[in-house]
Image (tube, rainbow, N blue to C red):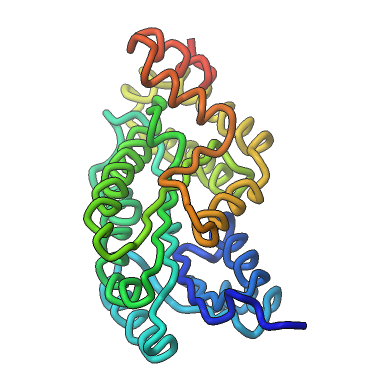
Length: 288
């Protein structure tokens, strides 16, 4: 078997323990990339290694901890040498649900630490290596970065922020021929929805009784919607294909909306009056 054309190309994927990140790591490994899979626990890295070739290397990184980012940079510099880092996939993310009136500010800060500041921190740290390779950056956005659902305000606003960060990076890095893209999937069949349901339930239990009674009906609807999303989410392979295209195509796109509802959300954001869009969004979340 001949040497893959991607064999000399290295890619770092954050949040590769499960879900989209793990699926992308395994897919790119099969394509011949040298994959550095960012995980927070050694056991997650060992699990990935059992499913991949010897090229895949787990690398411990928590995007909210500067020391782990610096250690990851040092490890990559030792491994990729003068070739640099061809791909950076900023996939790590969390989802904090709940009515904004009740979301603890520490949880809101945590949402931004991972989904926004973590992306910028890793990108800043890895850019010298990406610049060396004239590589590419792929950020993992969401349909919620174009259409904000109720009770996902913390998550949605972080993804809106990521949209503008991606646009700015694309323009600022054009001089060095570094392509920057964002993938914007609809709900995907990954563990995140199960975690959302659990977090929403826990949040409801910890709310003061007076506040819980105000939102009880909507929180119940959100829990039901989360269960439905858990069951009906699109196959993760559709998102993997978008990431693959962003890293391998001669002419990568700037954004990759994945799923019919994402395309519909983009159209609605441009053409529908706000209150009409609000009504559609509430009904989509099972609310009257």
